Image (cartoon, rainbow, N blue to C red):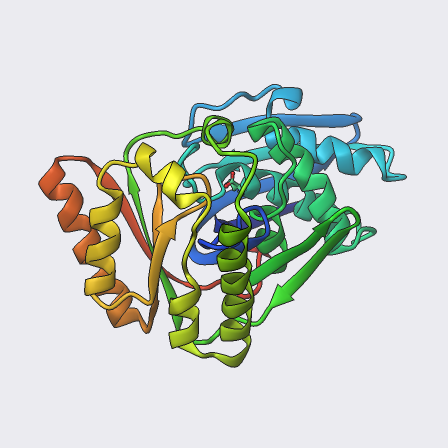
Length: 307
Ligand code: HSE
């Protein structure tokens, strides 16, 4: 195979209680990429449509992640990459992760899969390092594995795929402002109290247990963030109102998607997820802020080949 076209899913990182460790992939929101082998060594981004992002290999997350793979590979040729972005940069649903994982996943397929998914996560994390200054894995892991993932440890890297309840749906609203992950990380406190830690890891355990046992109520009760949301939510206009309207409309829980400004909610069933979308939209209509909204099933397979 000389060329491959792939769908790279959007992802919700943190999932409220799991800052930098939990993430989940969406099913019908994502980018498309075409990757082809070339005789010329190295990586070239030959097309980038949909967003105004750098095309120089070393300035582009797909380029940097791809180079991390090439460095560990015996392959003597190179790759050309075309990126068709649907995910807006700075929206909080894993735009950079979609590009970096799409590049390395496609390259691995074209080379007949010399690398494991865990190794692909490591290469993709170099793209995240370029985008946000920190090589976090909570967007790239679910994009590559599909479903929910837990980064149990960064050193050594240990990713645990988590069972996805079949009727779980996500609603994501993106108020049209841009928040750079690097900026929204700078405002975080670097110390937490023991009391907050206790609440937070209780919820992480509760969420994981709820996902494995398909206990929707427990999932909802565990979607709480006592550490990051109180700080970051001030960057998101209407956050508290969106959250309370989403919960009133029947959402199990609601929080900031990744580093924001997108806000996500989980619901049991598509009908409730659609009602939640309507309730969230109403808030921004009233405030007068434009938005994009997505309602999606959880993507259980991760990046995939498309025609
Ligand atoms: N865990 C990262 C953060 C995700 O919240 O900064 C960024 O998408």
